[in-house]
Image (tube, rainbow, N blue to C red; front, side, top):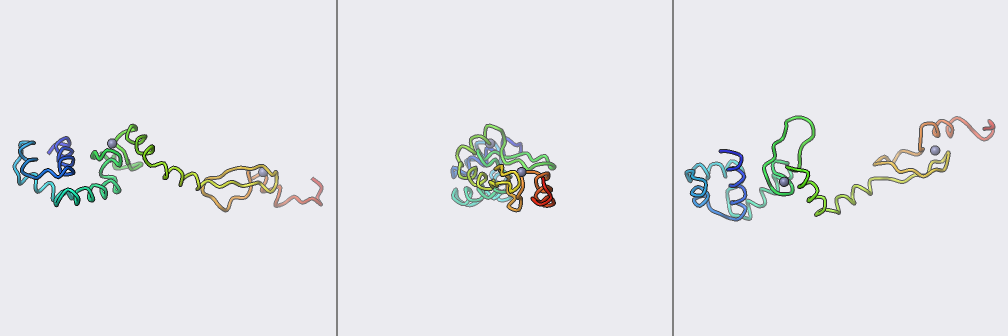
Length: 145
Ligand SMILES: [Zn+2]
Ligand SMILES: [Zn+2]
């Protein structure tokens, strides 16, 4: 089974096309198609297939945007999209995810220099810099700055 064929089967099953029709389309035996579908969560009716595909998108077997099979490199970052184009499309379609990310950025006012700064996802951070922390912590008014 080539990758293009696998992809075609995914797409056809999503539309609810039966094994026999797919087999005829790809010039494979019905059994080959049926076994492949069983192994890849593509058996059952179109609704079940769609559900499984969603699951596979979550597990990054398929591109989260277009449903194409992903080629994971095995090391490094897990790919979620087959292309930059798909990544862009997906982000445009899911702006709420981006918003969620933004709220993870916290704004602080440095108690030493009173500068506001933002920091990603670290609630414990108080000072804009280590320098300010040292000054605040170890220098006091009485020491005469
Ligand atoms: Zn894609
Ligand atoms: Zn500061």
